[in-house]
Amino acid sequence: MLSAAGASPNRPGYFCTVLSFASNESPLEFLFEKEGVQLWVKRDDLLHPEISGNKWRKLKYHYEAFRRGGFRQMLTFGGAFSNHLAALAALGKETGTPAYGLVRGEEVKDNATLAFCRSCGMEIESLSRKRYALKDDPDFLAELKQWLPEVYLIPEGGKGLAGAQGCREIAAELPSDTDFLALPAGTGTTAAGLLAAQPSYPLLVFPALKGARFLRRAIVEQALALQEKPLPGPEKLRFFLDYHGGGYGKAPPDLIAFMNRFYREYELKLDPVYTGKMFFGLVELINQGYFPRGSKVVALHTGGLQGIAGMNAHLASKKQNTLIYEA
Image 1 (cartoon, helix red, strand yellow):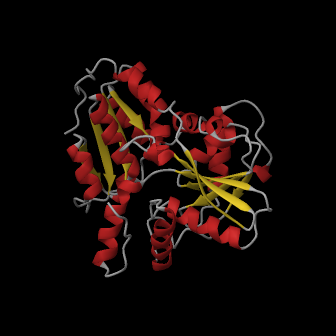
Image 2: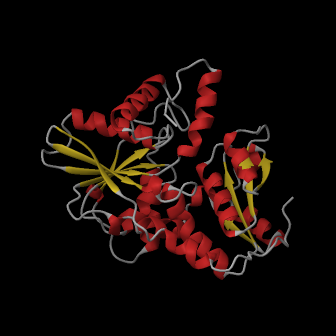
Image 3: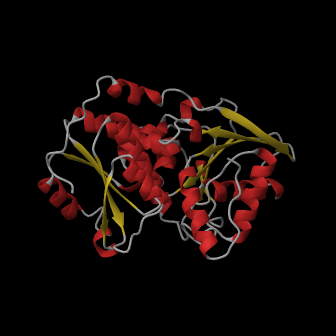
């Protein structure tokens, strides 16, 4: 059980090693050219075997604040298949830092994601959905901090200014001839960081949630809080709301079929919650002639591949087709 006196991190050298890891740029790979449009992918999924994609970007400055603040444990929130929980668990193991996860749903059972978290040493406790809904409530968070003063609280998904600060660094790694940057969105933190970087190209945002119009405001507010310069005009933030596949965590048969074909053609693994939906939308937009000829479109691969096992188990239980990725 979580205590206010967790063990202090005690692995010398990891502070600098872990924080400097994200300075290694992820590779940029060409996928295809069609209708005069080039599609490239920035492989943030390759940043780290387990702390990958935008989860590494978001955790980078949260971890720095944890170390500089003299805290002893890290605590965060997430669903039972959360990429963020898995990434924080791996970071805790990598750095010798006690990590704790509050998981949504009192009926939570073991699965591949939670088993991985526990194997990394993360303590897991389930919260009722009613209690979990308070995860951003100031009074609830103040109560947690009072009870556990030596625990560093990380918001669900690693969102917030620290998370956006890490994501802002992606912009400096993109080629100067980028015409469009596409990215999936959950909390909008990655898009906020990139918007704060003053991009010269439009950000094409593909929300994984149904009815995600609210994300525009969340993205703009986070970006404004991150820097003092005026933000780029609204034309730099473009939303595509029709590629959620039925809602967060939903993976309809046409999405699974697309992802399997995509892997066979390009040997690129996508996750069914975020990147699969984004690439589904991008390919459709290219086929529809959305992009001018000669455009260079870069898609950000935000990782999340650890969730494939859980999604396949869910699909198999419903006797639906699963993702078929070679080992």
